Length: 441
Image 1: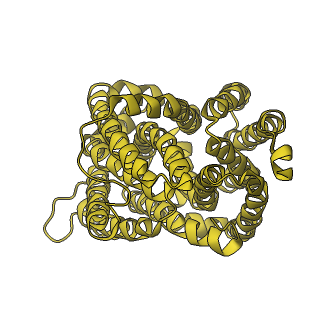
Image 2 (image 1 turned 120 degrees about the vertical axis):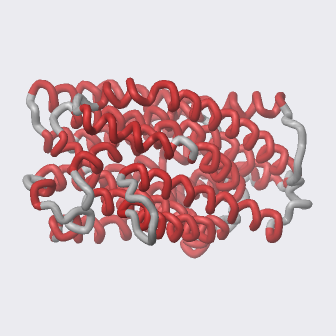
């Protein structure tokens, strides 16, 4: 496997495209609902975060299977890749059904705990009425994604993601505002549009795999579930599932504290989060590539190339992120104005928005090293690092919101979280991974 700049871009760009369209879906929902009302925008904020919390459990499961597939692919044991994919798909479908049932039973009390505004809670429940069906489609998409990233054949991610984006934009316009004879569904229309776009993405993955992928080489096909293999995948993935849930739990806690400050701040925060997700996309895209490449290099017996590869990824990420941050800092209201034309929603948004931007550079090296650790199958260590970092983060949120009541200060807390995780990552790598000795090998 070549780890030069050109190869890194070749592997990462389809992943970036996949994440880009996922964020375009979120952007479209936010932008359209920002023109419906403050209640709808706030409701989509907390309901969307809840959806991500369930989604991230499946995503964490897929990271474990992705690492295993990358190792088998690096070793040349291609037939095992298909066994891992099929077994992980069974596991993910079971998680999707569980997520659907739990959402149907408990989303109301959860939203009530996140916001004291009854109108926002009622609207959020209406959103999840349609959005919960998306778990079944998106968990299957996650299984396909982990396989294609694991074997470093990522082109399909671009095809499926752009199809999802196109479907979502069209249906958002039609269903939110009631165009072309369809009923005006508001926030529920946004949820239904997102769910149907995920179904479209799943169809693209399934058709492409059947027609274009070398199913014989990778031993893909219908099989009975291998419970022993499923147990092994879960043993590795349970830590990444918990780690990813902890990470998204950070966002959930952030919005829970903000939601108890007020509806106005919650609506602004939904806009901030959407903008930040566009800025984080290069980090998540290259981070996923780092995870896969690390696994492949270990499988090929080339661990000495891992750190130089991570350095090149960092150079690329900073070259992409820094110009975007400068643009956001120079034109804050123009960029936020894409999401809403309401002057009342944007009132007082400049300072907390700058605080949110301040956190981004610290995430670049942190995400790279976290994914490198995952590529070594050290999933338990990654979870422990995340959990330790949560303690001062939650304490900081409490102080900023409850004690000081500062909306802007709340948005600086992510920076301190990233710094703590980064320091713990470096400490773990130096003491446990023995990369210095590997570089000499």
